[in-house]
Picture 1 (tube, rainbow, N blue to C red):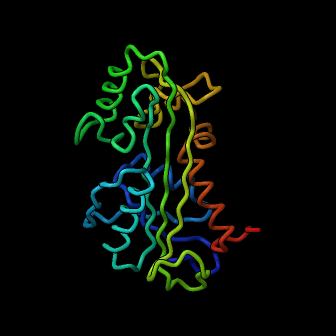
Picture 2 (picture 1 turned 180 degrees about the horizontal axis):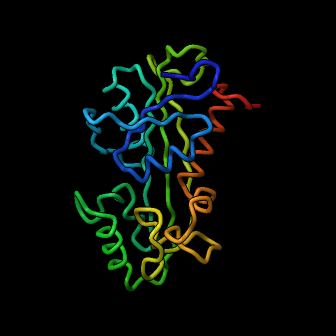
Length: 221
């Protein structure tokens, strides 16, 4: 469903079963989106893309189609790219230590592979894809892909990989990633601090700006 009667707030299904991501996007997009959980009977499509943007679109369109094209779907694909590992773990970030790996497993493998690395620079990447039913009332004439409108955005944040995890906040690689010019890892940062600098925070802001520019939300130029 699209914008709710006069409130300019979109109801969207978030294409993830990652609780941390669901909470983060509910917080980041709350001004424009009412974020709803993925129904348990909807199967997530395989992440077979070679880039974060490809995977985000595969997930968003897969969930959109699974829901009969009647509900907006929002997906992200995000992960860590490490210079010393030639961009790994990349799109395999969530599965770096194997299918079913825990955050701790992935972090342990990353640190082991970087034990002798002098260059510890890295970046987090986030790509977002929002798929809206084109039949939504008042849909602007832009970005039409037949029965749907696709709006995409992406962002990165640069930093370094620490020698050992620090902090218990966040999830994924947050405890070992220290943003540039920070003394804390994302695992040590408060929620507000993380939202200001994180790749998902930046991508969410970019998505909202695109929606304003294209007329989906008020405030565009």
